Image: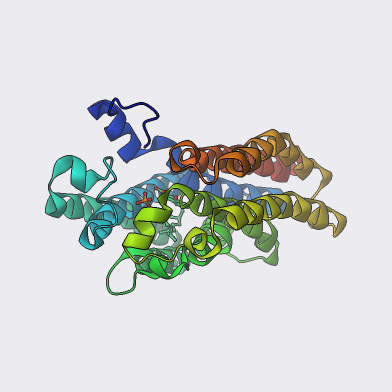
Length: 302
Ligand SMILES: C/C(=C\COP(=O)(O)OP(=O)(O)O)CCC[C@H](C)CCC[C@H](C)CCCC(C)C
Ligand SMILES: O=C(O)C1=CC(=O)c2ccccc2C1=O
């Protein structure tokens, strides 16, 4: 949340920033792409499983974000974050209970999938994702403070989530999930990478050595550009290797969003108030490129 004027944001805007609805793309896209991969490969689709999985994923991301504010309140890193739920409510204990409530409901949904399939594979993968997500922000690990968040993000939201979604549809694994898993892992990690640009001062003060604290914003903006180019280059590579059909080139319709993100960060990386919204441009890129990828994966089987 940034204010380019001296007028502080309204309570409503702070709550909207705290809840950050667009961020739930990170829950929707991996499950959608994993399901699309299963359909494209096997013409298998169970809408009930998809619905349960999407709901659970959203609940788990709610846990992730609420608990992030709770754990960050302990280190003081969010002291200047007006839209922290702990700062907004003044009730850290209640926020922790709320976070754990969302986690419990999310895991219940995955348990329902396990019961329906009489198979704990999906449950095991998602529980591992949640454990890794906790190590990112929760005591005593706080691996995000070591700059390891993007690595954890890549594997959990990429290959692991896509494999779980694929397995939830087919009850088998396939190497074919690695290509979409890599792409979604990259696009999700780009969101996290972009979330650090405007937080260098607060991160440094709290001892958080994020990738942007380590690289600096100038080099960080170059890394973002290279990573974004890599995302689209991999689609070409996967197509040349025969892993993807030509329909996955639909994803290239999201290139204007990629250009907007890279140019915005290149121009404003050293201005926290101006660059702070870049993660939401990254979310738009993640959402639309993910939807287009899913479409490209299912068209050959329609
Ligand atoms: C909360 C996350 C990032 C924000 O961290 P930060 O402290 O910088 O935030 P603020 O600036 O807003 O204070 C998410 C980090 C993701 C984490 C590395 C991995 C999470 C894994 C998930 C639990 C996997 C879920 C998979 C499936 C259910 C979709
Ligand atoms: O609030 C944030 O900055 C993020 C929240 C979140 O759930 C997420 C998930 C996956 C990648 C990045 C992010 C965030 O940056």
